[in-house]
Image (cartoon, rainbow, N blue to C red):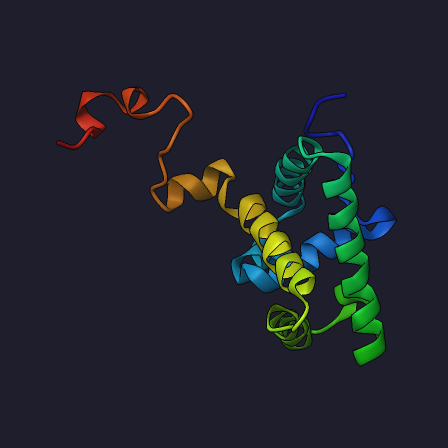
Length: 147
């Protein structure tokens, strides 16, 4: 099985991928245009990054994603993934201003994952002119270096 065919499971249980997609659409509205292959690529990027974190961090991410669902159910009678964009945005904005530091950190953490999943895909990085590489400036060659 190739990586492209592999099922990617994000934190948050069986609905982790649906929650992630809903979150990504709120944080990066352009994500609404992704096709299934692009979504799988974004999910693989995030799953790979999350897998490198300690188990305690993975549990915290999964718990926060479940909390989003619970709060959405209490406030709006629907899971986070089923909310219209304006209500999902409102919920995340409210949590980002919460008196509870953990809620604010949770929003910024999952927002960062959404950005990572969308913006580090090769087609998007190229489209926005992002050319950074782990090899550093030397990988860009003489023509790309600045003085």
